[in-house]
Length: 474
Ligand SMILES: NC(=O)c1ccc[n+]([C@@H]2O[C@H](COP(=O)([O-])OP(=O)(O)OC[C@H]3O[C@@H](n4cnc5c(N)ncnc54)[C@H](O)[C@@H]3O)[C@@H](O)[C@H]2O)c1
Image 1 (cartoon, helix red, strand yellow):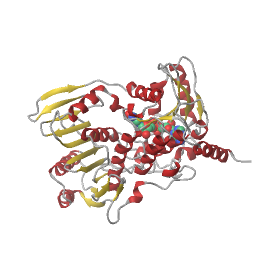
Image 2 (cartoon, protein in one colour):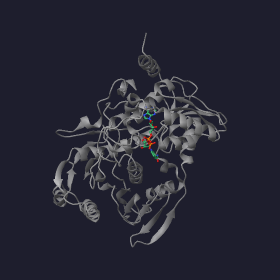
Image 3 (cartoon, helix red, strand yellow):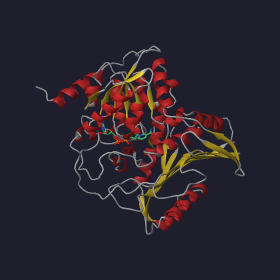
């Protein structure tokens, strides 16, 4: 007899081997049945997005932590007039249920692409959190799967549905600040130490094999099981892939670039404390788009705002600049610094609504954050992290000259000088910086070019049976 795990794997393979299915059609009054996968902090917002809302119902909650799953079923029931979702531990079992139309994924990052691809192959439409991938290649695979199976796949970059943000982008694209030269993203978000590296116990309610999924099954070295995986490379992508992906996406949107950059360069480190985290809390990323630049700054230590923003974007043009200080509101300034125009208005519900509108219309062009956009912006974060992780370690005082030697221009030098001041204000002394190489990219093939191109960093070793299918098998 097959073991339960083997039976699930065999069934999942059967589901995945199916030919693309004809689009599901929904009338304007049909109820869309939604399964939320991953019921941690963000999963609650997904439940709020679909439970008790006209036209949608949450019928299932899938979480490999039984405690999160069961509690969320109770809270969802309260939001939808007592209708209690069914808790399912294993996503493969969930996807066998033909009654589910949409799967809304809020697991940790290392599960996003695989969960999305499996759901697409099972004939579901998908809302998947940002970053849509844990590495560049698997993100492209989700796009390929979405197109092949004609599924709607919305990315959880909700700013894209906010009227304030949409108007600001239209203003920029219509030349409101002249020609855009620098698109700057800020992720200035205080992050405390996550505690010392140790050997901790996985909570009893968690199926750790499922939680680990495509990643290796490793001893738990962080104190807090949930959420703090963001700061360990095996599962997370640091703050670039946590908060920063929202602003990275806006920076690329402002540039109007539907492609990866020509070149990426990053440097930084995890400074100010030593803990179980591995990802940078201080980082500069530069993406070259011809004569325009996307510059991204991550600061995890205490910091004042820059030009009025902490978590936001600053888009610099030849006639003025735009500062967006939230997911929906911001101000345009002229070159003298006078405020000349304001934008505002938003709310997460619009983004979920936009997803179900596209489901009903069976048209991915209606999606405000189609998976293609989610993939490109997620990839810009991953590429920055690749450069950083390939970097040589140099002393903090050598960084300014290294930036100049590597051809850094005034914009990059300025970003570093302000970062160095910020570290001094935080009394971080005698520190080392990982100085990444400038990596040349072919935006069409989405790979590095040149001698010793580090293309192995564009993917990962997957742990069977949690393997991203090849392009032919998505
Ligand atoms: N769009 C936004 O504004 C926004 C905000 C917060 C978080 N997020 C994203 O949402 C995701 C989740 O973040 P979080 O803070 O809720 O993390 P979390 O660690 O608190 O919760 C993740 C949940 O997923 C569950 N899980 C893990 N593997 C699973 C699997 N294979 N099947 C089912 N459940 C599984 C975990 O048990 C946990 O309950 C992250 O990727 C994050 O980037 C987006």
